[in-house]
Image 1 (cartoon, one colour):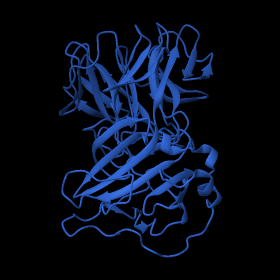
Image 2 (spheres, rainbow, N blue to C red):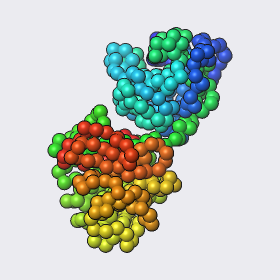
Image 3 (tube, rainbow, N blue to C red):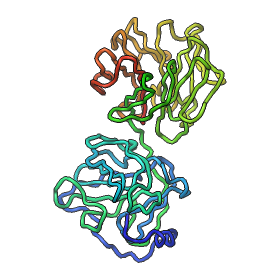
Image 4 (tube, rainbow, N blue to C red):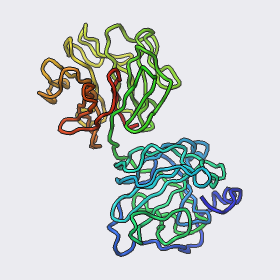
Length: 396
């Protein structure tokens, strides 16, 4: 976002950092708390290019290669609360601002989409939206216009989009960028923390997929499909999927993942079975007490008729394992151990997720009778969902 013509900006895209002239104050005001440990707002390992052009310390950020910029997922650079989330098509397009506490703010402009609304609490690494080129001031070029700021006047927000004394030079992973105009910096994102999971659902009656507060997907799925969610491409964001027993086919949006696999009575599960960062289908076959991933047996002689299958990373080692909820005894098991006893009710639909971002998965349930979602010891969502909805969980 700048008044500089885009053609001029592109001609300077690879110009190395020059003149160390600081245009705006770089440090926090005396009343600001210590700066949070900000990371780049991109997924772990992503290669990005940052340009200050003529509006330092604000940055325009692109993926490397630039052709991959449009639709690139954005994730929170530190914990905080969303205090702005709206669209301004005639100006900056889709906009998000996060209040990180202690007077520190980050602002994201020209987004393709926004995944969080005002009031949402985000942890470091939480998906917040996708990079785009919305708004007339994007000049039609996909990029993230990013600003870091401190609330110098104490009004509970940060000014953005024009030269002002609240913008500061961004700091990612302890390194400062944007100190001068016409600078170029190449960075590998170190935003590698674990993002917390949350509930979601598939409503077969309308072929709609929801997360709290928003529809994720419409017009996809069929009656009889069994809802799933997984990180199918290793981008750190979970997406809907289904197992269609009538054709023994597994789908993600836009593609069939697996055909001719699975049997009547199998319970589908999803997990990262080898620790490569991507999820794959699996099944529990109660008739033989056997658990399969495609091409391999995961576990034999474990589980009982009446158990409800799920999967999760129960010990934080980065690899998912089978688990079950046994409604007859209200007990949750992983192989070799009971995880939880005396919890859950008849009719509860079990899910599993990393609810607090600590790297380990825990049981949860959707209770259709009260439209309530629980993790052990806490309510995750209330008055949300309907009878007939299928629960899923993930970092959407």
